[in-house]
Amino acid sequence: PTTLVPRIFEKMGCRVCGNVDEGLRDADVVNRLRIQRGRQRQGMFPGVGEYRAEFGLDRARMAGLKPDVLIMHPGPINRGVEIDADTADGE
Image (cartoon, rainbow, N blue to C red; front, side, top):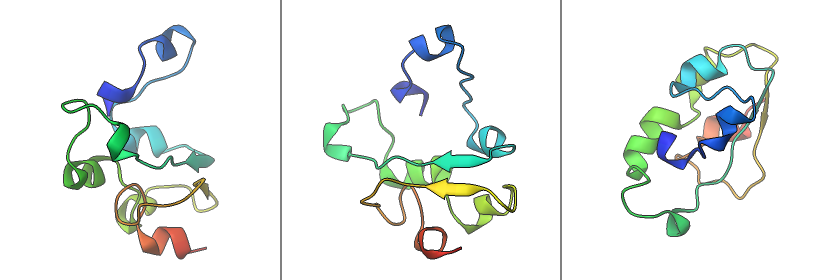
């Protein structure tokens, strides 16, 4: 979510993209981070369902990625939130 992206990232030369599918389209590596809901300030983080729909990595979103993309996640995984079980346990 844009509310969680520090503004300085763009000043550092990073491309910040508000659309996950656009941002993932040409990715060689996708590194997902675990959502720590207890550390998020109210109003800065969408609900879990909204987050999953907008940013979660699932089978449908995987279909739009390169076939040899490397998916990384440091764990533990909030299955069904930032990444679904099919993706986490798949190839």
